[in-house]
Image (cartoon, rainbow, N blue to C red; front, side, top):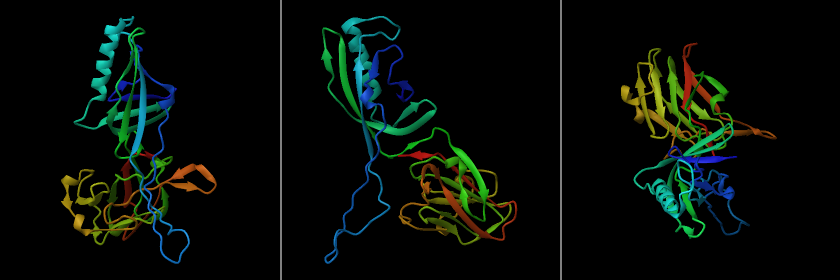
Length: 289
């Protein structure tokens, strides 16, 4: 049975103090921002692709009991204490919380806020209550818990990033590292055509780090992923493709022809003056809608 936890606390309490109702267990799919453009003399509207998703929201409905954390029934007093404990868990407003979804081997996490909690419906005689919390995922997408690193060639076409296989949403916060020697290195997301490039060279002892989320880049001379350890070269980066004015290289999974179970991120890397030591690396977590 699928389960949730919030900041490490099970939303199906192990002692039965509160439990999620079955109807709220499946993660909802995000909607898409709608844009309608019509022009005179043309039927319908202009087709627009590449629209972003709306923020994801999901209701979590709880049944609260009078069970004590240590076992046994504590009556109405324990029901009040359970409601207070659950309210404290759901009442965090000063930071994002981590919501973890687990269904067998499938584990997804998201940074969330609780935007509303309903007034509890209390049955005094039975010492039971029911309430609903509305969870909002500002970043829309669910992620893997673990960050992985993939290594490929700095000069090869249509390379499958195997560590990101199975994603259903774009990866918007990847770290990319290109190891020299390489002249005029560029990386292309095959699905969207988005590109990041630097019109300069890398020596064999140098690496180019690109932070796609922060839209920053640095040149380093050690085996590190820390941009602060190198020289800032953000101004030397050229980004092209959809939305490139305000975001760099969203790694987008492509669905295999006729096979929706085949989902892979493909990258093309180009550079001149490369050797066997030149390589492309991607550090990221898979993304899911």
